[in-house]
Figure 1 (cartoon, rainbow, N blue to C red):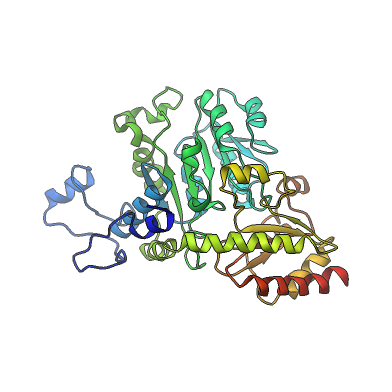
Figure 2: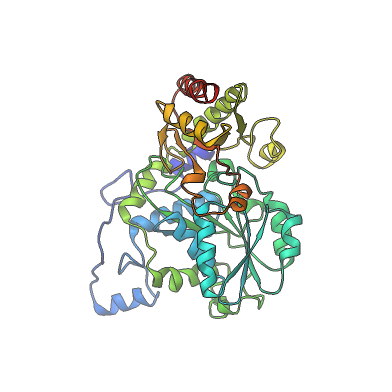
Length: 411
């Protein structure tokens, strides 16, 4: 099956009433016929569900669906994208360990790495994640490399194949946050990523109505090398060791489970992911090409032919650059005027909505970052991040043209 068909027919729904969507099992606990049967479920000697913090049929169906789409051996859904990032790392690292990450990460992820320092977990930052930049940072304490596939909002792109080769040569896993790329553009595990995370609140959901995240395991990394002694008790699970440890320890004990209703909304949303991303990517490119003809602003979008990541977009992302672009308006005052002059674009902190969204990152999601950290993330006082929606492109062009004329030229 091709991509859109697989979203609809990749996994058959099994329901006694013939439901065409997975039912919402909005319950806390599940009753069983006997104490003996519940004991078997708790000890993993029988299939079934006991408590929705540990497992739920609606969530289980979504996890299997995403794992199939991403080509993984399994997945674990979480309460948010940040919960997914946190759980993916804490399943691997412990006090005294180190993580390598890109300095231009999303602001919330940077804040998380600061919180991990209190647990004795150190993050070593590279200006960008590349094979050349991470190699000198790897040492005996390095337990993972974490990267955003398409940076948010820097829009730098990771060459997964070359970076994963360096990681694997040193026996460490590569964790890729593929939220901004989505499975429509690329399957990171096919290129060498070991663990993939998504904030499913974004493009997978599509409607901006549910907070959630997910972790997908490729099943390719060997956790029995001796470098990860915390996996010794899970060797029996083979390629499922990462997931087995995650489900039975940190994810389960922290309680990072997701609401069945939120998962249901994601399950509805993902069925149109391919159609939405096709339109979003097309709109983003056309809008970027249109805006770069305007005086007084500069545009950053990976699919523009003069962008440094254009070759990687062609070779790794199928020629499509995703739904984010950034604009520099010359000053913070110009940026605010431009944002406030838009009629259709909503001023909001989310991305991946059906609607076009804009935000001034320096005064919001990077408010607590210092100037150097902001610059490494591609965030300046005049930067505007645009999450392009599915509106008619002529309306978007007219809207942004009016805003540019009113703000930059008159500024």
